[in-house]
Amino acid sequence: MEMLGKINKFMNISGIALIILFVLSILVGGGIVLISAWLGRCAKSPEKLIPYECGLDPLESPRMRIPIKYFLVAILFVIFEVEVAFLYPWAMIFREFSDAGEGMLAFSAGVIFLGILLVGLIYIWGKGALEWEE
Image 1 (cartoon, helix red, strand yellow):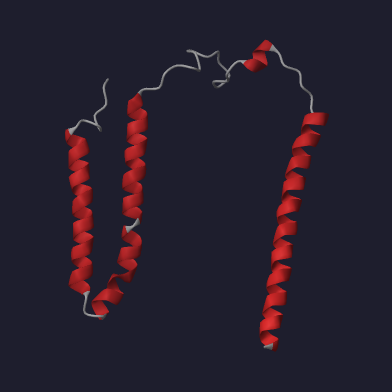
Image 2 (cartoon, helix red, strand yellow):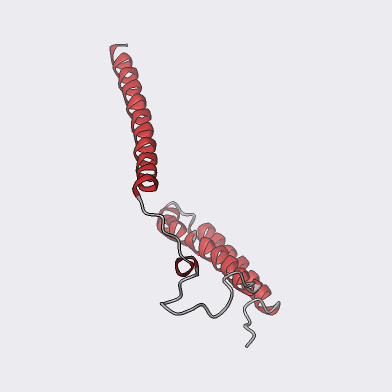
C-alpha cells in the first residue's frame, strides 16, 4: 500500500512537470515570435515582394496550375512506400513464426500481401498513371 502511494505521488509530480513544460514552451515560442515582430524591420519593397528564383526574375506566374499527374505520382509513392514499410516488421518476426512451426502461414501471408501490391501496380500501370507526357 505504501508503494502505491509513492507511485501516485510520482505520477502527479510527472504530470505537473509535463504541464509546466508545455506552458513554458508555448510562452517561449510565442515570446520569440512577438519580440521578432516588434523589433524586426519591416521594409517592404516591390523587389522583396516578388518570388525568388535563384536570383533571376520569375519566368511564369507563381500561381500557375500544377498538372494533376504530379499529385497522382506523389500519392502512389506514399501508398506503396507505406505498404513496403510493413514488410520490415513482417521480416523481423518471420523467424519467430518459423520457430513456432507456423513458417508457411507467415510466408503465405507475405506472398498474398506482395501479390495484392503487384495487382495494384499492374492496375495503375495499365491505366497509364505512371506514363509522362512530353
